[in-house]
Length: 598
Image 1: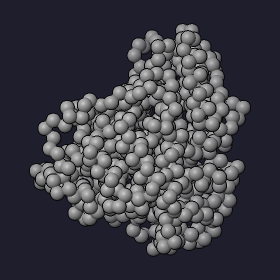
Image 2: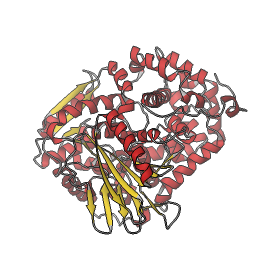
Image 3: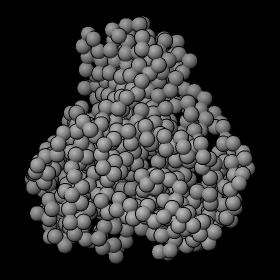
Image 4: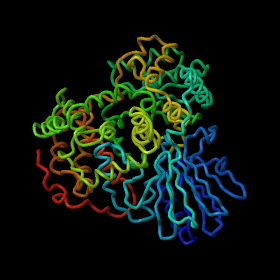
């Protein structure tokens, strides 16, 4: 389900309705529209694009004074457990408030039309309503981080309400105001028995999922803990879905052993690099906004398999978010050590990374150079989120855009964690920005577009608040990330299965980039002379990276860069509407004084 609202004069209603209808047709969804009249005589019209409309149940809560609209509806899910944005309209005062929870996966955007304002949790709707131009802050954020900056969208004319904020507007108050609704300083003291609290809270959340729900199951701590709690609850009806990278994949084998130990049914999806072309061909329909990282290919395949397996339950459980909440102790310490290196030495390492072209090769030296390069020119929190060190190699961020990106992160996220220690601030940056905008985004849109509830227990407001109030002595006890979660899990499976080295949800990407379908996409879409994203890059360097990607093994930073470039280029090309986007300023004018490292 997707949501939109129009607030304005009656003259703008037909245009909004037509745009909504066209977009629903493009996505294969049905439209339901509800209309109300505000006290100042403006129209308030609310629209839901649904896979299978359910007679309006739970859509609105109304009194004579106000209307509260649920922006997402899932059977059996209470509004306070859905972790979704809400729109509240005060009918008499003609005031509109839209609130977004701190770790919500919805990106609630808004734009001004000649007749009023349009809100939507789907960025793809806006080119049907207005002329749009690319916002260079968003483009450069994607190239560097793989995720768009808070409060920003890919279009200059469209803004976004950052997570943990509320946007309020009334005609009497003048310009709209966006204020924080989540503040670290306001959190209650941590529970003195954190293990018991987490177990009780997870049990309460998981007990209410519908029968025969699907759990994404890597066999890692997060998914295994949820499987163990479900097993303790007697929920043998829940089916596990595992992605197996190869017959020799030890993680896949262990996942099956854990499932058998817990008495739960486990299905496996087997990796096939040839599916990458199909993933790229549907990014425009699968995602409401662009992002990118290397796990987008296996995750997208897993999601499409889950849609068939979910059946009547219409619910998929996803453990994404536990890393941000409980797993940043070691990561922060690594970056803290890097920033302890004198800055002139880090600048020297950055120059060596470019000059020696270390980024061309996969090696420990490349990895060290990449990390030091990332630390040389940006604050620690930004470096920790950055995906590559290709700035001034494949793209160059103008100083004013760099300042604007830092400002967007500061006002959209960092201000809400004022007073917290550095680890907690990094944790909230992950939970409120990177995780919803990238990690969890890979599953959210493709599932909800088919009426399936993507349920993320670790992103629920209660868990986010609780984890943010815990000290890192608890979360990182004895130098062990996720120490609290691991203690709980070790009650149900052998400790050696719990306390093992972590393996991410990716494998060497060379085989994926060697696929004929991926190479065709790179040459025909990414390198197309009509691809406006090349105006933000060094086109010749991008071309060289593409040519070498067929047979050469790069460091992960290069693959991550090419991945986000592919997804965003495909996303823009596959949108069925919208005028030509304005390119960036001429490349030469942005590169004056920047040495060429090709």
